[in-house]
Length: 116
Image 1: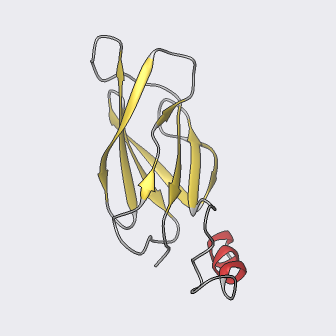
Image 2 (image 1 turned 90 degrees about the vertical axis):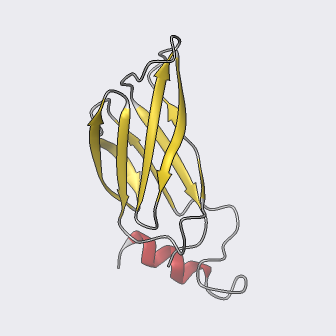
């Protein structure tokens, strides 16, 4: 059983549905500055789109593209991140340096919402 399936099973009966466990991330990851996953949950791969632009694919889809997530630079560099795009199966993050130019960095994200 996948970790996402275990989470769904764990959540059933606690609230109104199988994915209603409030407060638990439905996916998260830590990735290198080339989008290689260092550690993750419900995240199958990362794609380096070039220059601080990364797309990550979920193992199990979200219920809609209206989920909450973070874009966190994780390598002590002066960077800030934003969510550039969301679908039910992917999240695209962009990171910028202090000059507002796209810049590579180690990154992480936590995704909250309902699984499909």
